[in-house]
Image (cartoon, rainbow, N blue to C red; front, side, top):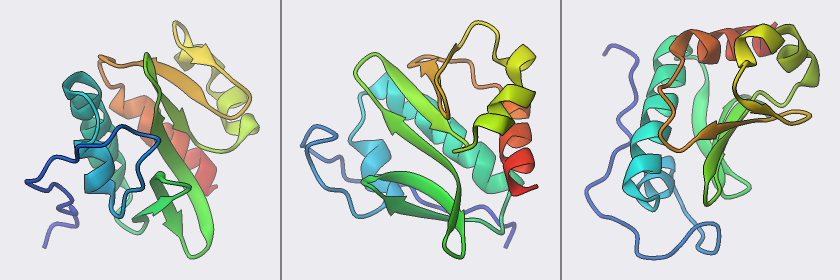
Length: 131
């Protein structure tokens, strides 16, 4: 066991997010259009591999990484972008230079659907959130 969770499924959901309810992170990812699906899967794989102690769950109908009852990172899809969220404005403030070119909100960051995933940024986000 190398700590990587296998959360890919073979079936593709036929409803459109966020209208449909999903049971698993795989269901969520597989309900996305292809470009978003690929980007979201890389983001989730990156965090899962770097932080095997975190559980990947569905909360608020989107994939979230948590330990116990505390959430450390989440992802959600909108029509024209994905939102990545360390749920902490201070973490985003500390990473401001690395967020250049991305749209920063208070506790989330918008990334393009076809974002070339910055794995270093993701792992730093979660690492700082873990404290």
